Image 1: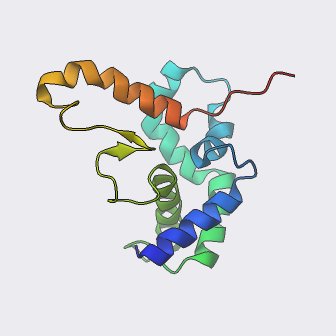
Image 2: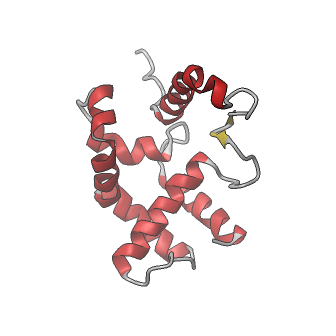
Length: 143
């Protein structure tokens, strides 16, 4: 995907989410995750990601991306192209400048010295916590 297409994907997906404080993952996943515990979400993660791509919101995003971006993935079928665009938007929402900051996930850096093989058991929890907090919806305001 070209730099220009990445920028268009980011712009379209950011404009798509009505609340600028909410992540793209959070907005697309809201209908799927209602009432599910963290343990359920982790246990069903693969299935939930497949379902997420098929949701009405994700398909609306796919339509906007198809109209705004020239890149359609490596598969030429319409369904695969739509899925590839949504996946690209989700990935870019986590790392808008791929390759610019290796070993970085939503601005949280895993440096080799910190996460080398000798320290792996102590870092798994840190990575999971970073991923969970990056993908979690912001707390609801108290009214």
